[in-house]
Image 1 (cartoon, helix red, strand yellow):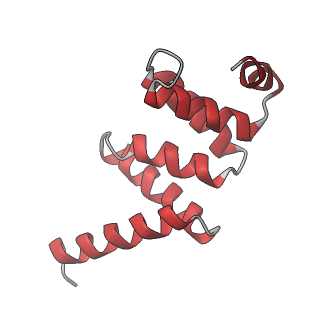
Image 2: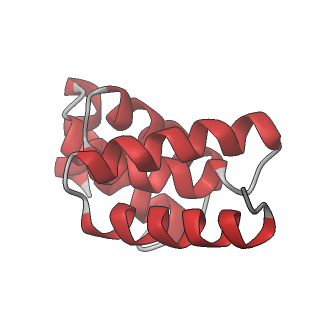
Length: 102
């Protein structure tokens, strides 16, 4: 944890994403979704596709504007080759078409 905390101050994007996961799941630290969101957002802004996916997952639980941003991040991560983002984008598009036929 000390390495990750030191990396936080150096703004290492991969480390920020890992810190986000630790706070999101409460793994070795007290669970804090707000801290997780902040770490994921910062790492996503530095083009870490896993962080985009993680940040999107939290945003998808929010209001319509947050969900729209989440979908955009999942699309971006999917286009970059993130396998889970591809899977969830496909599920989302399938469900969207089910509920809103053309």
